[in-house]
Each structure stands twice: as C-alpha cells, then as structure tokens.
Image 1 (tube, helix red, strand yellow):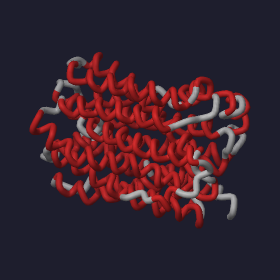
Image 2 (image 1 turned 180 degrees about the horizontal axis):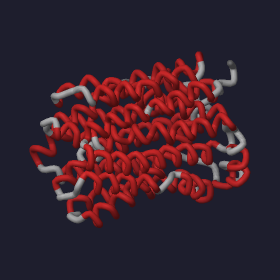
Image 3 (image 1 turned 90 degrees about the vertical axis):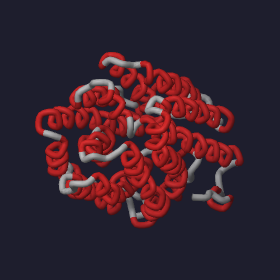
Length: 394
C-alpha cells in the first residue's frame, strides 16, 4: 500500500503532515514488533512447560492493566513523552523473554509488556485523530492504521520461518530493535501542545462521557466482543499446533488475517464517513460468531488460513468504525474517551483469556471455541437493537 502526497493532503499544517508520516512509520515498526512475538508467544510459554490455563492467566493479568491511567498521565506530561518511554520499555522487556523460564517470571514480563502496550494503543490513536479533520476521520484514521497492518503482515509472514531456522528466541530480539525504531520515529516527527492545552479536566470529561448513552453502549459492546475476540490471539496458535500445524503455518495465519485489514480499513473506513458507523459495526459484530464457528468445523491446520480472511471484518472494520464512532461523540475529551474505550477492550480481553483458558484446559480448545461462538452473538444483538447512529451529518 503506497501513500502518495495527494492522500496526505490537505492537513491543517505542515507539522501535521510530518506528524502523520512519523506516526505511520512508527506504527509500521511497532506492529511489526508485535507481529514477531504475539502469535508465537503462547508457543514459547507452552514449550517452557506452562499449562493452557497458566497461559490464559498471563494474558488475563496483562489485560487487567487498563489503558485509562495512561490516558490520564498523558494529559499531564504529554502523549509524545508517554509513547516514547513506554515503547522503549517494551523493547527492553521483549529482549528479556528468552531468559525467562518459570510461570512467575513470564507472568511479570506479561504484566509489564501488556501494560506498556495499553499505553501505546491509547495514546497513538489520539495523536492520529488530532491530525485528521472531522469530515474525513474514518478515511484518515484508516490510512494511519494500515501502517500497523502492513508491519504486522511483514513480520508474521516471516516469523515462523525465522523461529524454525534460528530459534524462537531470535524473534524477541528482532522485536526489541523494531520497538526502538518506533520510538525514534515518534521522537523526531511528532510535536504537540503543552499538556495543559490538550484537554479539559479529566473529571469533567468523565462526567460528560458517562452521561452519553450511546458511548456507554459502545463500551459494553467492546467489552463483550473482546471476551471472544481475545481467543484469536491467545489460543489460536495453540489450536493450530494441536491440529498439527507448524510455526510457519501459525505465522501465515496471522499474516493472512492482517492482509484483509488493509482494504477494509482504507475503503470501509472512508465508507463509514458517508453511510454512517452503525451499519459497518453491525456487519463486523455478526462476523465474529461466523469466524469462531468455522474454527470448530476444520480438521486440518491449512483450513484455518481461509477463515482468517474474515479478520478484515472482525478487526479492521470494527476498530476503524468504532474509533470513528467515539470521535463522533467526543471532541476535547478524545483522550479520556479513548482511555475508557481501551479499558473496555482490555477488560474484555482479561475476562476472555481467563475464561477461555479454564474452558480449554478442562474441555479442550475446540469446545472453548464452540462456547465463544454462542457468546459472541450477545454483543452483536445488543449493539444492533440499542445503539444509535452517531455520524453528525445523518
């Protein structure tokens, strides 16, 4: 995906254009780093002697550390500073994974890593939205977010081969280098107003947002959908391994999934600016039970690969349209709103990781996916019948 000059204009200032390019490059490196370690992390834990329920606990514990405190802190000392520091910290932690050997050590590393990831996923979208005009929020945010998709595609496509050729530990060192590059791009390209000028009081923002019914419905929906969605990351590599798949197939599965994000984020993000957020969000939410059900009927690891094409809907469309949904509702309180959004996201992931681990450990991975298939209808039906359209020109 090539970003040409016409796709980046008009920005409000040249500084915004530079910031967008820096955020794009940083996002590419950041998600490439994630793509190297997250799909194969469950396998590293399994190889190190951990049980499935212990793996679920590690993912749960990391997810419990919500993004909201990072949003509050960023409002005081600056989003750029938070992003640079937490990305450097993620680099250090990634380099420590090959030296861990016990459940306690992996638990501590997971807690720290996922906490710092929460900071980045909260702060970076706000910086990206600050550079986009409200009339093209869906389009420009989609253009920014494909940087992460392309980075993830690149790294997941080769992570399996590298881990099999050079050892699974190697991918953690590569990830550390990419995190450092991500921090450098942010450091040299992004400028922002003083923290005092970024948002009004967080307490005021909180009071306003909690009275917004549509925003609360979205938070509940995001919480519920992530209970099932987290199983795509936490347990799919273990499921592929159980079906007889190699590390290379695991990498391909995550790479193919990310390929579908790119057109969905670019074109359907822009479409949401025209037809509204809700139709696309409803389509995305109902794609979850379909994807989860298909996992339960395959018997060969290669058959997982075409199912991953649904990721464009289950993640690409859902993420871009839901962030635009948040932007429609909020303006000066975007940082707080994104903090609450990511809190719901991580809380759902925490519950899903723990619940999925318990079910899989006692009844098998396939029955865990059967349960999640049925559960994923709940957020889809809730949002369909209760949420209202937020696009202001509709």
